[in-house]
Length: 224
Image (cartoon, rainbow, N blue to C red; front, side, top):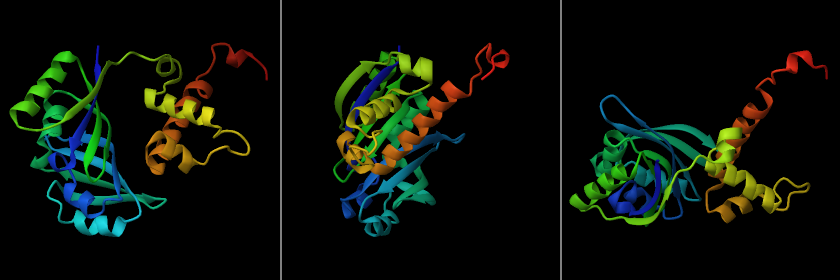
């Protein structure tokens, strides 16, 4: 059974420390990580906050990422694609060699919060041994076995997507008028507003696809 582990890693041991330190109000959230045939790891990440100009100025001199390209901009947040350098070799090793999946990664000036999926306990142990041997400090915050949730099986929702929708429902986000704004809900869940918006979009897409676009066996023979 796969393992979900949450780590805290100092930003100077991982990525974008220079840029995040220069603009401490900014938040970086990895959206997707792609491994290339050359074993390079190319992340897609959102940058949000009130000091984007300072971050971008420092961003150019940050030696943890190279070949960066601005892809999109939504509500003041920017999406970039880049390439991690040797400064983030731990995650490169985990992703390429161990088959680890980065589920969530949020970076701030002091540290990164990483949520990662390992195929089994052995791969998690290998990752920890690698960090110890290479003097890479980290704080392991939690470990749990990944069980297939009912929501994922029935409605094609990830655990995070399900949590987002349920939290929004309980907070009154779907009421009319809404009891909370998206910004309030994002603050409550401890994520950037853009991240919450992306989660809503993905969750709604999966939910609608799984419930409204799959034909019932007798649907063609049933009149409205």
